[in-house]
Length: 222
Image (cartoon, rainbow, N blue to C red; front, side, top):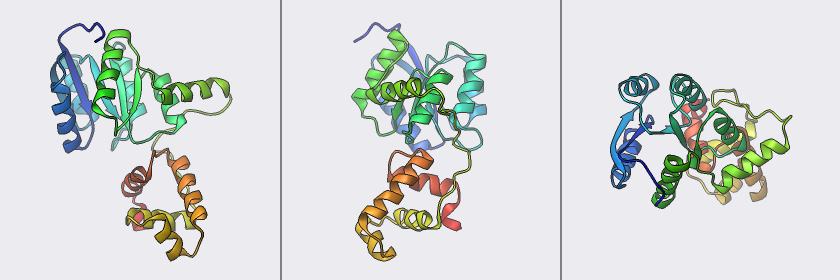
């Protein structure tokens, strides 16, 4: 194990209580973690940080009212030594690059396994950063294409074509590619093309991310 100053306090900012409870259980099982504090919204986390600054913050990228980039900017403006690790279902390069440029120390998918999470925490606590292959590729791409806009927020408006919305609604119903193709009378490759375009537009990592996006933005009611 890397050299870590004991004891460590971890903070969680996520609006899903069940996810926080599961993460808390996992984190408290690590030998160097003394305590875990949870918050479901920014104001609550800010109050906790002012009482005692945690060593590491695990930050969800999409929060109601104030998204991850805004939270990171606000917190690092007041607490520049805070180490932030992003946990998100969004894996698009633009989000990874933005958060790393804002000062995050690592960027992990929400379905990360326990050994990967532990390794990320140990690296961040001991060396300051944890670079996965995914993060490294996104950062390298940002350097190679410096004129391409990389700043984007999860609240920016995304436009879907009518056909994309048709596919999205069926994805949210749990339909397979074959079932969607049959119902909409289109080829499977066309369905996959629409799915890929929506992943790129929203920054979602997978179909589950598209469902979350659709629910949070009221797309199932349109």
